[in-house]
Length: 160
Image 1: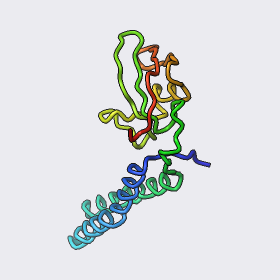
Image 2 (image 1 turned 30 degrees about the vertical axis):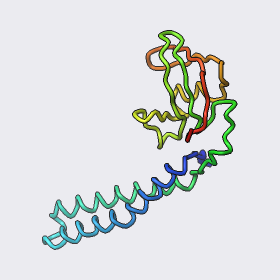
Image 3 (image 1 turned 60 degrees about the vertical axis):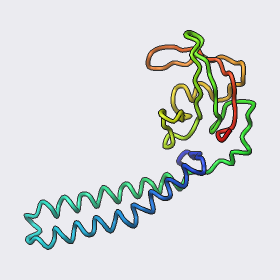
């Protein structure tokens, strides 16, 4: 059994829309490319046709992967999140104990992670190290640069 992934409503809808686009526009475009290549003659020596068929296979694999992701995806009711400890969709303000730098992250699923917007995966080293922590607690987390110690300063909901 595959592991369930939790998403914000926004992230879940983005995946559904992407899948819909791939099934409609994407398939239509690939069918057009195949028909165009077929019109160019002998299929046994037609590299364009082979490339279009390969692209079709890759496209169908991507569709199957997205369908699989959506089949195990669950939307989290953000109002039911317990802010007393860090969990999925928690917005966490942490302080690096070594250099005093403060940063705020939102813990999300791997597919929604985007460091530029402050969203980190619950499966990342920092995400895993923060799960279950409460305000005031410190945690040592092994990151590629070595061990880092963080203090949890604040926990709030994703939308706050």
